Length: 236
Image (tube, rainbow, N blue to C red):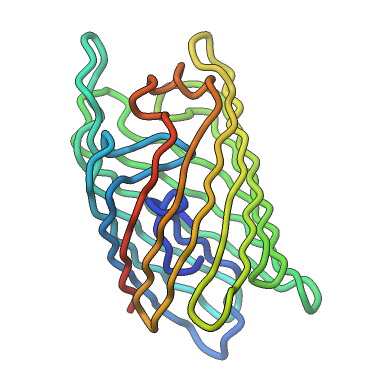
């Protein structure tokens, strides 16, 4: 899963985050996004090129939610390294509830799958926890024992903030830390900040992404340099 407004994982990582469903009945939502790049945790997943994402999310008033996410990906060819392919498919399921008037929490399990990867290990799982304050803030944590399908243990911590500006604009940003227990990869910080213009089901997003130097040990400088990403999403 990637984060909850119709802003995709390629805009803040283009991630559809589901806070907690409190409606009187179950709801199904979807979205399609096109963007100039697809960035996840500060690293380009599309080699700095335009790409697409799509998602479908189900949320029940009792607190259960689940969803699917798909994206076009692209990585440079590296001698001796299996190419992860050109398609990412994720599935997630979890449970969340309100906690008082202003807070909500959720726990979820996400499976990241790269079906046309050349690697023997083409998938990995993450366990996540999120604490939400209204629609203004999210504090999230994840843990995996097979980070990036590479056998490394990892955890992340993220703080996301959002603030409306008038009726149709919103400013938002995320600060995160990715910790990796690996002989080759170093821990790093990542962040983004940007504006979103929301007109009914359409969201236009302009966002800057960057990382600290440790990210280069994971994906090299080309995929981790600071970059400006524009995207357009249509939700339904």
